[in-house]
Length: 386
Image (cartoon, rainbow, N blue to C red; front, side):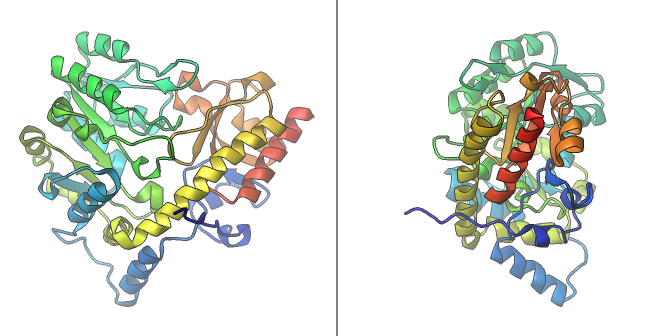
């Protein structure tokens, strides 16, 4: 049975928010840049946070906040993935988790493979961990982006010690298939390397694609892999700090048990309360409604671009609410987003921040009302016609 799409909040309500999306630019700008969405919170999350405020429950996060059990149940229900809660630790957010795991699996000066165009903090977290970025760009085969497995193998054979994977991939929205992930794991195992997988967009996979958790891609993946994820992207909880670090083997679990307890103390109590509510079964209908809305919007964006920016190149993402769009045909330079914002009043994410492969690109957040998306593309289209 189809689920009705979730409706985004009206702009006047959204502009009252105090988050980055609504405070970076003035009210004359439509903000479609940072990865925040415009929908109301899932009712279970609102109830959990409201109850906590009313009882003054604003202290430290407890030693066992329940997030491991909540995530394990969610993973089984939504992905068919059996996770042992005893193999999970938690921290403030996904990038904190990535840094801490990298510190355990690589030494200062080691190289870590990243696959641009990719989420800009990937470059920073590798450096924060004391390692060096090894770029192995995605391959565009004309119909989809895919990992350059041969290139990754060459990098590992030459001494790189880890792969930082984005699964599903941001900004392209690519969902890597099971066999690709299994082969990546086999390559890493051959070279004694680790794979650290950011899976924050996993709950947001669209019809026609199937999410495979990296750790569930086979025995090699379980042996070499670490997954870090959170409810924050799907449920718009970025300001509430909570993420989980998941392992699937005795050896990798032993590694994350070496993390200082301070890593878990960085987890926010409200993040845990919201995450537990998000991962609970009562929030599934809300998530299904969000997915229905995003599915409509990713297709609407294709129609709008065809009508107003016909020279733009856009491929429907397999997952998420972020669109990777090549507007280089319009001659707006390597970084078109600043000009688009100045001259059309639409804030998009800067393509070159995702790597050199982002020249001439923008990332568009379509996690908004259809009418907002329509107005934004019409504004940029008017700039193209000017």
